[in-house]
Length: 80
Image 1: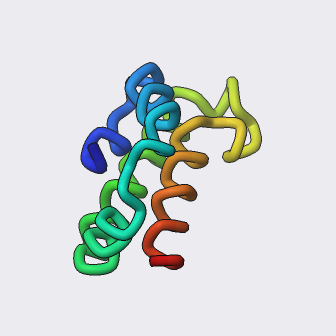
Image 2: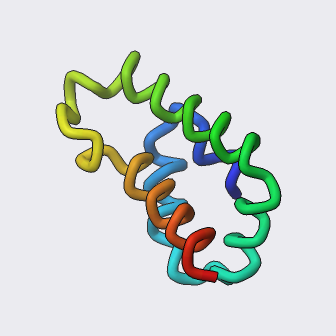
């Protein structure tokens, strides 16, 4: 699931955001903490796709679902 947050298809990101409440925060939080470089690369990909394809639609980053989904995943890593 985490890998898919780095994709450009907005419908994938919307599906991920919808299902975030069903995830196990301690499990994902531990994975993200243990794999910081991977998480940062995935985040950079999402930001790059937003910049190329969606910036004109979502001027503010948190208007775009990818930023919201990754912020929630980052919360998992900070709270668990």
